Image 1 (spheres, one colour):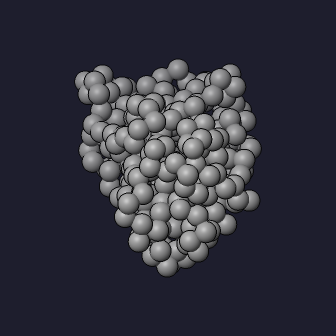
Image 2: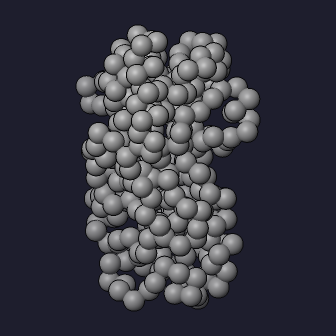
Amino acid sequence: MTVLRRRLVLLPAVAALLALIAATLAPTWPALAQGAAGGAVAGAGAEAGKQSRLVLRFLTTSDYPPFNFYDEDGVLTGFNVDLARAICLQLEVTCEVAERAWEDLLPALERNEAEAAIAGHAVSADALLKVAFSERYFHTPGRFAARRADTTTEATPEGLEGKRIAVASGTAHEAFIRQYFRGSRIIPYDNPDIAREALKAGEVDVVFDDGIGLSFWVNGTVSEQCCSFKGGAFLEPQFFGDGIAIALSKSDPQLKADIDAGLAEVRASGRFAELVTRYFPYRLY
């Protein structure tokens, strides 16, 4: 998708993170929970936001847990929802968060029905014709998992040469594996769930999948603790995108500076790291 609704796979419910990453094939440790660079500038932007607006209207969807979803009490919640509220708190403005269908998020911003949409958008040339974007705040890696009993396999092209790699067919993950793990036996499956079950049954040596969904699977009940992550995170932008950002209405030239400043202050305060731990309790990177 032009938007990081390219979720790469439907996430069952989804893991811990830290931020801006180098575009390398080697596993990396992003620093999403970093403090704000240029704190003085960010602080000035936040002060401007506090003085110029009283309300920030955010839009999101409700079908993308743990980013945005309805809880058991029917309350709209999730990582994105709480992040929006944290930004509002830093900017000292009233926060309104409403649900819209995915396809109506950007059009609603164009119609000035809200200031921002926080729902997993990737920054794309097409989208930039319609809306502006904040700084990127989240990156989703690709990860390998293997059976826990396998203590020798290494998640490298050399370590997986001749090994059977399960991957969901037609995904960015399959494209990545075919590009960089050509010496492996690549076995495509109709969807990630079937690929994971193949690993659980010992029909393949490893599975390569979206890091968020995979983290919940290896730590959840469905896997029956059969498997664990193997190696580190892969964040090659060509395949996995360069992160998601908050989509913004272009009608307010000060809006991007305010949102970026608020986001920087949320990071610096430690609140961003708290939200990551709450909604992504399993190791993601």
